[in-house]
Image (tube, rainbow, N blue to C red; front, side, top):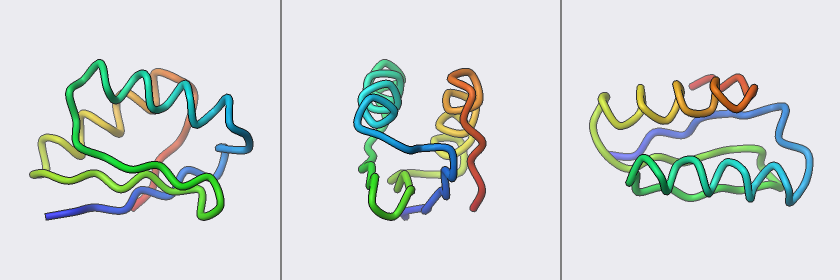
Amino acid sequence: MSTVLHVPEMHCNKCVERITNRLNEEKLDFTVSLDAKTVTVSGDEGCVKTAVSALDDLGFSAEQ
């Protein structure tokens, strides 16, 4: 199962780098799209909650 999270505050490659590094620390399966301003998380609801929490820690809001 994949869940698309919209991350409107993602504006640049540095944002993508910060998000990628943080979600890798959480050992999540994900893809980041700067053009679409989305993070697609593969996994169950627990994985999605972990990703949303990690993004929040970085100062990004994430909406499904």
